[in-house]
Image 1 (tube, rainbow, N blue to C red):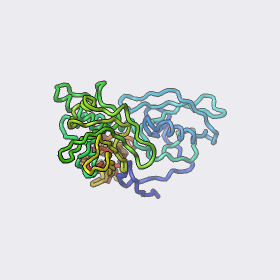
Image 2 (image 1 turned 60 degrees about the vertical axis):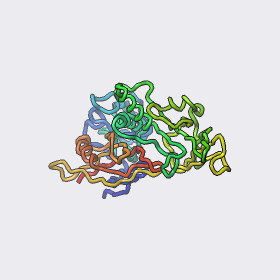
Image 3 (image 1 turned 135 degrees about the vertical axis):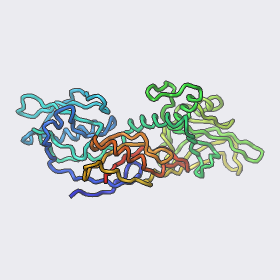
Image 4 (image 1 turned 90 degrees about the vertical axis):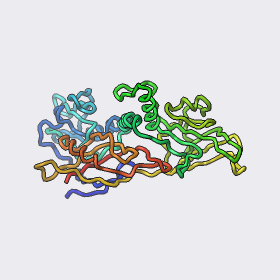
Length: 378
């Protein structure tokens, strides 16, 4: 009997997924083309970040027709037009085989239980759903930022947990690109996702510390540091910026006069991270030159995930897996097919147009959130 398990998706989004336990040994496909043609590859998934480990796990489990140990070598890649990512080609052999068998492996889509091609067997193994592909997530984030920036307000993240931004703000790469795209659009040179400009903001977190008023005094910040709850200080890219450096750090963003800024290798402030700002003089309490601002972060949470409608004539259907970005409005954007039948992709994409989540937040400000989705059909 198939088991129903609760799946906690990347970062905490919760959904139900039907999981079929992996047989041991794994089943052999009854399709003579499975894994032996480019059009019907073995789907192990993982994307650019995890493909090597997942392909190796599958290939290491393969055996010859009588259980012989196999050897394999990669022989290049290819793929039909429109295929997301190449199909990897392997030559597989075992003792007594005159000519190696050519296998085709899709590392950009997965099946819950990959099979052995006809003529081979395999030991028991399990792949499961791949993690979020960080490379694909970055590409999706860039596209979303370019689309969002010219038409929607993307506020900076407050350094203060109460959302007041009294001591400063942070801009992740998504915000920096959205502001860049807005400024470019206003200048009549809109950014095109197909041809990214060389000066598009790169990875990292841009943190701005503002001057603070103490009665008739204005106290200027002098340095910024980020300390995690445990471990070493977050590395900074370059020096702390002042004057013109602050102005030019992020195109389209203007900080108050007297602010300083720094660029860190962090993607976004995490729960418990402390932004420590040191000022040039004692602050309003007259006792300290420092402010330690502890970040409060919450993951995205599902609000409404209605199942997709079964296509006409089907009594049941397997789920479709998607990697998506939850935008600051709680919508599921930039969906990418990573598993499940290709024929069900269109109704799955139609279904998630109506899905909503409570967006992830840092110090009260909504931020983007990468996650995997399982679209069930009823």
